[in-house]
Every structure is written in structure tokens, then in C-alpha cells.
Image (tube, rainbow, N blue to C red; front, side):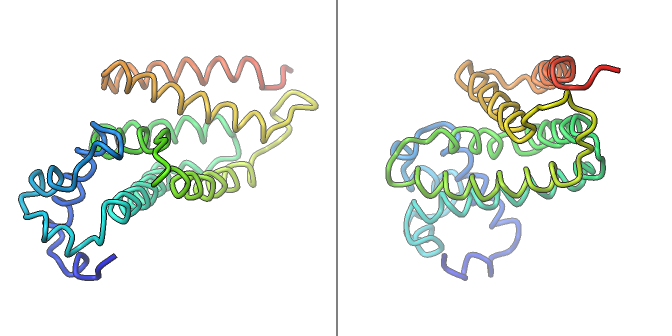
Amino acid sequence: MNERFFSLPEGKQRRIMQAGYRVFAKNAYKRSPMQEIADAAGISKSLLFHYFRNKHELYLFLWEKCAEVTMEYLNRYGCYDSTDLFEMMHRGMQAKMQIFREWPDMALFAVRAFYEKDEAICQDIQKSYQKFFGLKAGKALGQVDMGQFVPGLDVQMMYREMYWASEGYLWEMLQCGSLDVDLMEQDFRKLLEFWKSVYLRRE
């Protein structure tokens, strides 16, 4: 990426990023023209290419920035300050819902990017995702009290199953065109209670 982008005033950087998130959140990678992003950002397409060599570079930059913001919010909400996995997940859910409220286009972009099938970008996104997922899983499971779960439970598999279910739910909401954050928060609370009933050790 061209370092000239980082020399821009913060407000202009944010405007370009928001334009990219908005366009990519609405369309598949192949159907998201750089001209539309430039128009949304209020700059020329040639200037956008001055900051980013191509659409692939811009897309990956936005994805990595999204991951950074997500980790920032998870830490802000104290997601990893507990030894109770479900308390971590509850705080993580609150953090992500706040991202949806403050950065709705970025949040939608993240969901769409996770399921992007275009060969030009899919492999890079999944490689980055696996690194990001491993970082989150490592932080979460590394400090969890394993005695809280039913005996013999494969905790790593449980964590992956819950993560996949959460991502699938977000994708379903995206397909329905629904952005009711309060409803999503209610549904995630119900999911957490269900998982507790299944996986926690009974006294």
C-alpha cells in the first residue's frame, strides 16, 4: 500500500475507508467497482489508485483494519478479563454489537468478506481469518477454567462450533437485509443461555 494514504488527514482516511466498507458491504468483490468507491469518498478514481495499487490491496487493507478494530473493541469490553468462557462471549457479543452500531458498514463488510468466494480474494481472506481466529481462540481458551464444562468435552471443538454458529447467524441476518442490532443482541443472549445449558457442568 502507498504510504501516501497514511499521510492524509485522519478525516480523509476515514472517509475513504467508510466508502470502501459501504460499497463492499453491499456487493460481492467482483461487483464493487473502484469508481463507485471513489465517488462515495468524494475523490477521483485516479487518486484512489494513487493510494491503493488495485482493488485487491484496498480490500485486504479494509479487512485487516476491521480485524484491528474488532480486537480493540474486544479489549475495551474486557472480553479476556474473565476465566468464564461464557462471560467472555457475552462481553464479546456486546463489543461486536457496539461495532454494528458505530461502524455498520464495516461490520457488514466483515460478514460478507468471510463468505466471499471470488478466487482473487478468497484465499487471502481465509488465511488472514485463520490467523485472527487462532489469536482470539488462543486468548480465550488459554485462561478458561476447564472445570466448568461437562466431563470429556472437546472444548476447542465447542468453541469453534459456537463461533461458526454466530457467524452463520450474522450471514443469515445479512441475507434478510435486517440490521436490527437490538434483535441480534437478544438472539445472541438466547444462544448463550442455550449453550450454557448444554455445555456447562451440572452440580
